[in-house]
Structure formats: C-alpha cells, structure tokens
Amino acid sequence: MKDMEKRKRVMARSMRLGHCICDYKKACPCDILREKDICPCAGERVDGQISPVRLMELVESAGCASKIDEATLKRVLKGLPFLDDPRVLVGAPAGDDAGVYQLDDDLALVQTVDVFTPSVDDPYTFGQIAAANSLSDVYAMGGRPITALSIVGFPIRTMPDDAMSRILRGGVDKMSEAGVAVVGGHSINDKEVKAGFAVTGIVHPDKIVTNAGARPGDRLILTKPLGTGIMAFAAQIGRAPAGGPEAAARSMAALNNVASKLMIELGAHACTDVTGFGLMGHLAAMAAASKVDVEIIWDDLPLLPGVLQCLADGIASGAVERNRDSSGQCLTTDENVLPAMADLCFDPQTSGGLLIAVGQDAANNLLERLHSAGVSDAVIIGKVLDSGSGRVFLRCDGRRKLPSARPLIRASGATTAREASIGKQPIKQDSINMSCCEGSHGSERIAAGETGGADATQRKFQEFLQAACSPGALDEKTKQAIAIALSVLAKCEPCVKSNVKKAREMGFSQAEIDEAAWMGIAFGGSPTMAFYKKIKG
Image 1 (cartoon, rainbow, N blue to C red):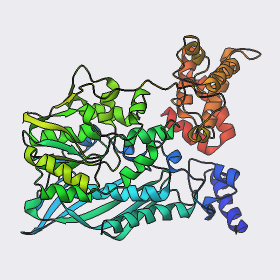
Image 2: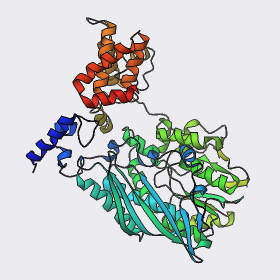
Image 3: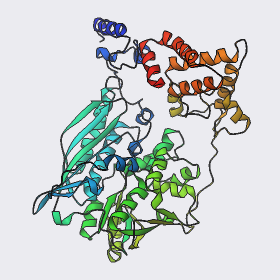
C-alpha cells in the first residue's frame, strides 16, 4: 500500500530543488511515476512477478562484452605500484586468470573476481552463468574453489525484488553444485543489472597451471563451443537462430571443473579460460607468455548451433572490434580465411571453455577422457609451433563453409521485443541510419540507396523527418533554432551536437544557439539546464 503522505513530502522536496532526489539529472515527477505510479524516492517498489522482464533488454552490452577491452586495461594498469611480495606466486602484472598467494610449502590461495551484465534474459540462468564464469579462473589455474562472495548491481525499486532474488538463487545453486560455500557478498543500486562472484580457491604451489607453460609440439584443446557473444547480440537485435540462445545458455552455465581435474591428471603444460577477450585475446596472451607461436585451424573450432549463419549475416557486437584492436596485431590469416571467419576469434565469450596446452602424446587421451566425462564439445583446435613472439596463425582448409546471408528486411509490421523496447526510449543517433537530429541529411542517403538495412518502417520515418525539418511556413533558420531547443529539452546529447554543428554551418552565432537552447531549458527546468551546461562544456 502506498504512503501518499510520504510521497507528497518527498515530491515536494524534489520539486523545490528542481531535481529528483533519487537522480539529480531527472525532474520531478519522473518517468517511473508517470508510467507506473511508483515513486522510488518515497521507497515505493515495483511489485509482481519477474516473468515479463527480459534482462538483456535492460543492458547495452551483454555478458562479457560489457567488460573493458584488453588494450585499455593495459594502459590503465601500466606503472601501478604493486607490492613486491615473494609470497605472490602469480600477480596482477602476469595478466593470468587469477592471482596466487602462497601460505606455506604445501598450500597457496587462488583468488579471482568477475562481474558482468546479463547474457541471457532469465534471472536464475544469469545467476548460474555468473557463478560458473567466476569459478573458471580458479579451475584454469588448476585450483579447487572453496568459498565465494556474491556481487550484485541492481536497479532496486524499479525492478521487482524477485529478479534479484532469482539471480542470487541461481548463483548460489551453481556454487553448491561446485561444492563452494557462498559466505557473503555486496550489492549496489545500479541502473544496469550486473552480477558476479569473488572466489577463493586452494592449490599446491608446485601444481599451479599458468598460461605461460605452453611448449613447442603441444596440442591445443578447447572444451566449450565458441559464439556466446555473437548469440547474445543476435538475441538482443531479434535475429538469433532457433535453438541458439538455449544452447548458449547451457554451455555458459556448465562448470569447467571436470576439464580442470582431467587436465591436471594428464599433465597439461598451460591453461587459460576463454572469456571476454575472445579466443584470440586469450590464446595470444598464452603464446606471448610462453614465448611461442601457435597455429589454429578455423574448420576445427567448436561452434554453437546457428553461429555460422550469424557470421554470414554480419552479426557481431562492437566488442569484436575492441578485441581486434587489442590483439589483432598478433593474428596472421591465410587466403582462405574470410573477415567474418576471423570475427569469430575475437568474439567475447561469457563463461567459455578452458584452452589447454598439453603434450602431443597425452592430447588424444585427454580428449577421450573429456568426452567420456560429458565434456562432449572438447576438440583439438591447433598446436604450438616453435619458440616465438606470441603470433597466432589462423588456417582454413575449406571443410567448413559459411552459408548464404539471410535477408535483413523482415515482413511488414514485424518488430522484435528489443525494437519495441527501443521504441519507448529517445532515439539515439547510432540506433538507425538517420536519427531525430540529422534533419534532411538522412534523405540524401536514402536516395543513394545507403539505408544500412533499414526496414520499410524506418524509411517512412526518415521521410517524415525530412518533411518535418524542411522549410515551409517556417523558414529553415527558424526550424533549426526549434531543433536545438527540442534537442536540449529531450536531453539527447547526439541531437544537440548535431543540430549545433548544423546551426554553425548555417551562420548561427553562439548567442543565437544559446538563446535557442534556453527556450528548451525554460520548459525543461533545472535538470535540462544542467544537461546543456555539461554538453556545452
């Protein structure tokens, strides 16, 4: 039951300040109050079941695609004064999967932490994946995880509490499956849902498996199929192939404990788990740390069902390009490797498999035992060449072909759940070929046939924008001033920048631009003023 007196008291404060006390960038009443009759600042919550909520519609980048790229991390970490402690057997500068700290001659701690956005829509499954992913770093080092701390970011009061509860339940259940005790955790109020765990494991100091031990002649075994990042992005844009997301969820939720145990028994020389930096990023790091060059065969890479079709359709998230920028310089491809094929190697994996370097004589035995133990997707993908600088050679022998691309234009009127969600939000400049801030320029691209795959509905919207922005009863300069005012009122940063740039090209003075902006501020209030001052710099 709502406490209307409390709501009035809290809203009165917000209105006097000109800022919502929960989010200073918003005015009061906020969109949540208008749409759902809920005042978060007054402690009111969204009630009901979580079933209508789809987690991936609430995030920009799904799963490990949300992580900071490798190149940026290296720049940020460079020169940080890490303590030189002889008990740190594997530390941050090593860039390995986890840190290892020696307690005594027979025992060392393996410690790691991992947090990311949802890679599936179902909260319980997301919790399972977050736990399996966090445990993998310990398994990759040859350790046995024993305790975990949960970490959750959640938009409290704007989503049902049941969603957060199911995320945690999924994580706790998966940790229980691994025999790991969840001993506590931490939570923050966050606009984007995030979850993960800090995990502590144990290992004998003499039995640590790092990414630096690969030897010439070793075979490279990958234990899970690739394509989780591609599949998550395909699901977000409504183009996932039938059965693909479900297969990806099963793979991501599977533990790497069996593979870890068997690789230790068979004397693996090196290991890493394949996650956010993609196969290429993690393999190149292993090769560089081991001072060798490696070769992989594209036709032998294990794939999720439907990934080949997605590659043919050009479906790959922006994280592929970020990973390419970070590790692409290490890759050499032969003439049979198409650009779409190489994209697969840079695809960010969420809770991916173990990449194991093992001696040639033991490789087939390890593979057989993995298959017998239920790790059915494990396969030899390549081999370690001679000593080198960490180069990766990608070969294709033509056994696997890309299918023909599917047409991008859907039947008239068809929309995806993601599009429906986007339709309720301000249009961003990069969401379609022409946005609300580009005026008539979009029509020039339409005429040239450069629609970027926009469907009939988008083209009609572009035509409407052209008509609305063209001079008529109002001259072009007046309409441009109105465009600036409306862009500021909508608090659309790309729109403001685009319309201000166009105004300057038309000869507007800064005083005229500011005066147009202040018309929008007059209607939007203090939050709009703060937005414009921030954009204006």
